[in-house]
Length: 214
Image (cartoon, rainbow, N blue to C red):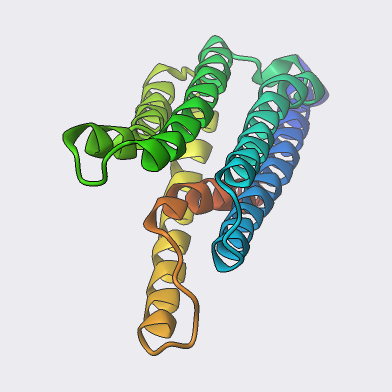
């Protein structure tokens, strides 16, 4: 077997990995824009006493954006990356995240409707308020399951290191923003935005990690 034959699969795999990193970066930007736009829209609506119907519409638009990003990552990403990265574990992970993203959107709409119609502080209101967090917790479990099922050691190493870099970035941003907010120099950001922010940091982290292995 010639040296060229040995190098060719690695180069092909590297190209597929770069394609996935690009798609993840685009998805990260989409998630970031969706979250920022949703927070800004809710803030504006509260300040202007918008109707409950408009709040539901804004929530639905945010949900469509999240599902669109999940669909793009699950369909377009593997198609452009090539067969080299279409492992069975990766395909299962993409299907699971698509399902859980739909569940997240539906639970968010139910929670907002419950806030409108259920008695505040009632046990049912507590359950409805926690409902949107359930798909996120399941999503995190799916990530851990993917790392366990992935047989490609290189991809598993990249995903693990990228998750750690994204977690470090999230903690750094949260610490800086928290002190700015404490001294009234920055607006309050809801704690639920931590997971979308972490997900948004995964794309750049993957690009950084893959570049180191080139």
